[in-house]
Length: 163
Image (cartoon, rainbow, N blue to C red; front, top):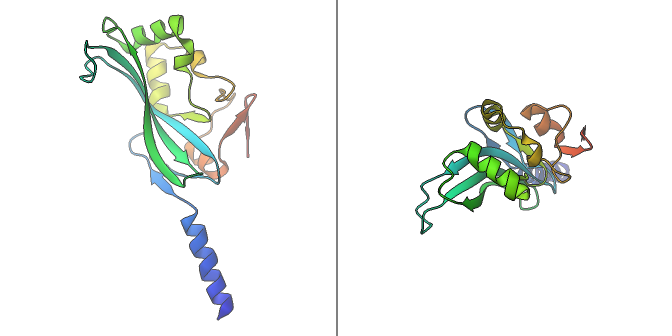
């Protein structure tokens, strides 16, 4: 009886220790919170040219992330905003402005995985995303499918993916 109770407790702890979420659209694979790590997925990057919270009106460059927070054992979304002149009307103009004036504002959050949606948009726009990557969130030499990220977690040092 004690042995069975012990196994039930172990299983309950295991289940409580893992949070999961399922993406829609092009990210339909399941992701989970891993250990004591926090990592991000850039799920959208866009320019809001009609943000009513600013007077006078401004264009706002937004990066939307899904956060896999193993420290708090939860998954949530956050958005980083950079305000600029409302004369900037397209995301291509916004990226160029930021590259020339505030390149650090383009940097990804630490340990960020870029979604297929964003990678496709960058490619469509002819955008060279080198300013997005930095020491805290380096670009890997090879990309991992989300299922592999889920299996191994994601740490990228000097272009290598580690377990």
